[in-house]
Image 1 (tube, rainbow, N blue to C red):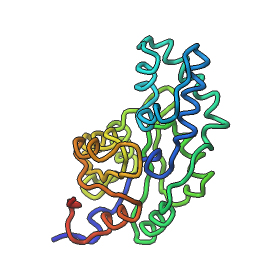
Image 2 (image 1 turned 180 degrees about the horizontal axis):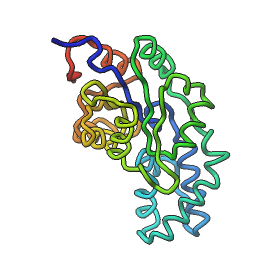
Image 3 (image 1 turned 90 degrees about the vertical axis):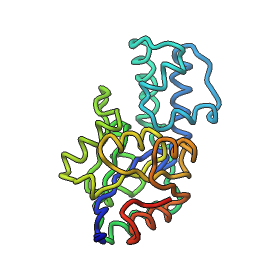
Amino acid sequence: MYSERLQSAVLFDLDGTLTDPKPGITGCISYALEKLGHPSLPPDDLVWCIGPPLAMSFPTLLGSDDPELVTRAIGHYRERFTDIGLYENEVYDGVPEMLATLQEGGYRLFVATSKPLPYAVRILDHFGLGHHFEAVFGSGFDGSLSDKGDLLAHALRKSDLDPAHAIMVGDRMHDVSGARRAGLDCLGVLYGYGGESELREAGAVALCAAPADVTRRVTSRRSSRFPG
């Protein structure tokens, strides 16, 4: 029998799912490129970098997988992001209402982001979202837990969550594939940066055009598998 609390916990990605970080992330990437003697790029040419760890994006941007060069690029990125880029961000319409509804419904809410944990906490608190979450999980500045599958497995273990009673919500293929590796289903959101084909191919169990659709899917009593 389907339990009304079968999905009792929801783990959310941050960038592209709760907030739109495009100005901050793209601006800081261009800043880092310029610091290393590369031309800056238009923001729309950098949206593919929103979601994956920087260590995955900079080798392509720099045309080099030299670890020292990538580390320098990430350092320059953080020079600007720490005090400026972090706040060049905005909460998606409908997200506060979604979180409030789920929290009031008794769901345990978490954030699981590849962004360094201190940045994630500051962003959530700055935009007044932090109080909705039981815990926030992110990567270390050393790159630890930047892999989404490892991060989600860590979050499940630390929070004593059963994957069968939880679901991930994210906008990129890394969210979906990481969730699957951790034994979780994943709802894909279309208002972020992944797009329908990317999310479907990665194996999202359903797609949501707006935060209200996430609420509807999570609270649905019709099926434990969130049909599309």
